[in-house]
Length: 245
Image (spheres, rainbow, N blue to C red):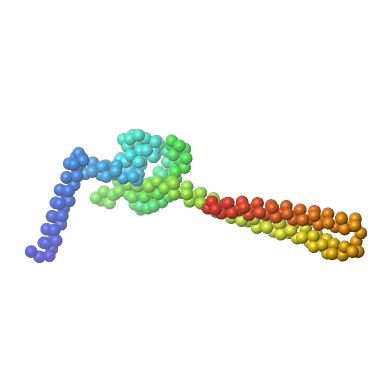
């Protein structure tokens, strides 16, 4: 037996083994056809998986698709379109994307897609892949879609983005405050230094004038203390924000 004959024989054996395996799986799970086997497989996957005809009607889907659309069972979606389950703006967007996929025969791979949850009304996100299905003469006869819920990931990224924006704004505010504080500190410090210079010549100043000098020093010192207190409060607030990141 030549190499070609051996290869053909091996392929036949492999196909026979595969068919036998499929038959065993179908029998074990009470399925009667490969179509039932496909349903069985997609029903045990966490991703949303569905088939649509060229007009956008659902031919088949698993439970995650049904739940996502607000249905209890996949059967409720068969023969219907996205317009029966989603807001018009979302459904129109899905329809346009899928129409272009089937028109061009080009798959859409790992695109982020958002929609409004029918039950909670919140915005949810899917990572979606949509592939045109062709027959034996290369004509598009439908579409296979696979969606993965990435809502929690998007929320976490958005929360981090908002936190970073808040931190940047706080840093800008702190820079402005630091500039103002620096300017305000110079005034009482300059007053204190000037008054101390005057007080150093106490022998040439009468008692009343000296008393006025010390009152002025006390007033400037209190103003300086208030400024330092405010600055400490700002620094404590900034530290708290940094710790929460």
